[in-house]
Length: 399
Image (cartoon, rainbow, N blue to C red; front, side, top):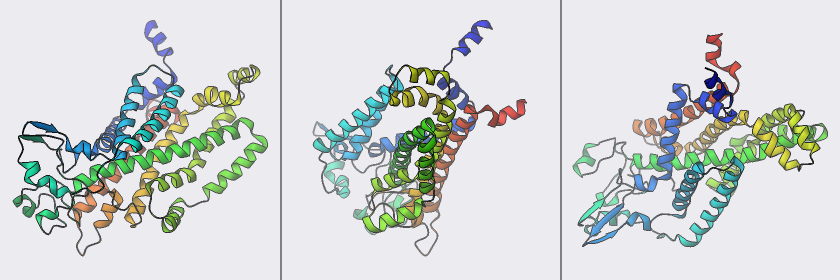
């Protein structure tokens, strides 16, 4: 018992919070769903595409899908590989983050310089004898690209899941097709990348701004705190959705613009959290010792104080990601989302456009939006209970 107590006492705060977070069944299900979305978003071109992953014709092996990878596809794959490698490298959190940022910038630069996919993608070609009469080929799990409208099959449009007409033509659409004839399952898989990217990047922008301004407000207090709080109140009064609608009307539809606007207008909540934590921490002995030692301000704020006050920020971040996903889905549902890119909100809008209600166009994307937001909320609640035991539902039962 003594050895066990000694081992527990040496457990770091981060490990303790993570262990308590994973104790519930709900958070495990939420993380499993988020993990599935990450896999679908990263490997979407290999999971749903009209072109073979690998094929052999007359003894020559080729991979058509690699030639059509876009710059975005390559960057996403590179970032995923970099994150997986850094997760196993024994470095501090700050060094890992710095290496990830440098690696991301380098990957984006190299991808833009080296990756030159074809400008036009004609998916009908991949159903001609040149790609079907081969020695062997390996197709994706869903053999349809998100923008493959199947025009070579004649007139196509809305088809319910496993429709008889599609099956008679040798096509299998597990989730049916949308109004232009594209496979819904393929669009669902590719749309997960947009949902995750806008949620994570917009929240990342908001967190960076909120941590810097909130840290300065909490550390200096006084005039800096007063001016900062007035700035926080100004940004909290800005309606994000109406600002997004205004920018879309004036500057067109851009995923990056949505990320920036959501991030810039959402930092005030994170600033409040960090300000409150830093107001408590600035009088701690280790902070006073760091000040007396003459350490730089950035080192005091972000190397010594931030790791001890970042825990409540994780709770807010999980809810922030869910809010950003909902904002993008709302824009797409209103018809002001991205053009040419699959989106859950856009597919949800198609469910009510025609004269009849197309249940599969509402059930699948609507269910994905619900499950994703619900999963992030479950993770956020689990973090909250692990950080503050007084809020834990289990604590009340034990008491």
